Length: 526
Image 1 (cartoon, rainbow, N blue to C red):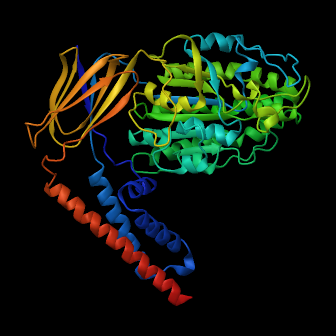
Image 2: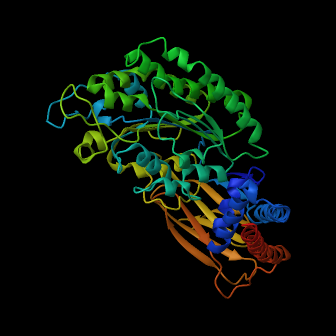
Image 3: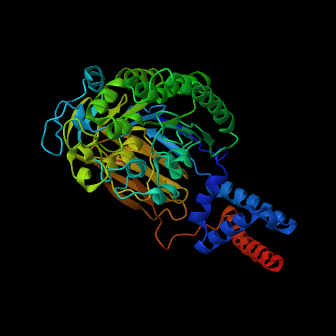
């Protein structure tokens, strides 16, 4: 029985950061440069002046108004088969953890060929057996910033600039669908990653001995502000006692490393519990980076590295159980691995000596959610496949602008988003059987299509009922179809459209005028 449920995605939770996304996509490059130039000039106190202040306010409110009226499209969600959409996702990134040191299928070797010890994490492996454990996953960049950039963009050559761009990360797409983004990161916390979070706490020193844990907020809006401030308070309370816990143990001791590594996981458990009790309807992505295992590999030799892996086992199981209790998808992975020259030696992963080793390249990857298949998944996959697979599990239809990865087949169904350009009749068929037919002017998200099947999509625009646009779809993975009306069809000349065009022209003119006046003023003052 077909179940149709409709939700409207308003833009009340958009914020000033998202305005830059609008500018990037809706304006010319020159217009964007003018805006940034005006913003930067205004940020210098000695160069502010009353005229510039007034004009900038006019630009901002005009931007906001156009943004709200031009992006407020709704989505009709149609379940062709019953699916389970998690409340969000928790991504646990264990920095520097190679699958070779605890996957039962692998045996780690030092560069000189010596067989190395493996972590005894049998309970964690038993837990992973409840999800989809991907056997062979390669990190294309074996260093921390590169690994995190690849992971969130789905692009094998990603860097901080790619992460900074609009529409390139899982966080951007999730935010478009009303999700919030939180992060607890001891490593991998580049400014690009931080800027995509609503709230993040991170170790600014990357120090097991004396961590510095600032809390930063971004993307504040009317709907996210109160939640963000509550999360800030929780993070600050959690950070207050960490140093005293660390100081109970000698420096470089295993106990000190264990305290450091478990702290972000326990903080995440508290956050999940808080969100479940206080904001049960708010969907979110929580990113966690555990940093001390990587540090152990660099400074405490292979024995310290193995002991630190074992030290997070119980906390990881507790985190998964918390995710299960609150209907959160759980992802366990790493940014890169770790190689050792010999037995009882310090390790590395970035230089050529280490980066060519499978111990540095191969990372663990486990997906756990209600609709995720159970078992070990063979085949060769890349770290760039993680982002697209996560969006698939969350049933979020969205394009990652730079992605070159693929969806890992961890589910038995796929989804289809149909983006319509105007009001008309949408029909979806399989084997000549009509699965859905309705007049709509909204985008439609079909959930639960059979994998590796053929579907036929038809669209009849109301502006010209004699036109039928047809698309043949093979459902190998989730996809987005943009239904474009043929060139001869009627153009959109509604009052709304005309107003938007007029406002768009006015905006560009106002931005240019503002830039000219402010630059002229600065030149005169100098």
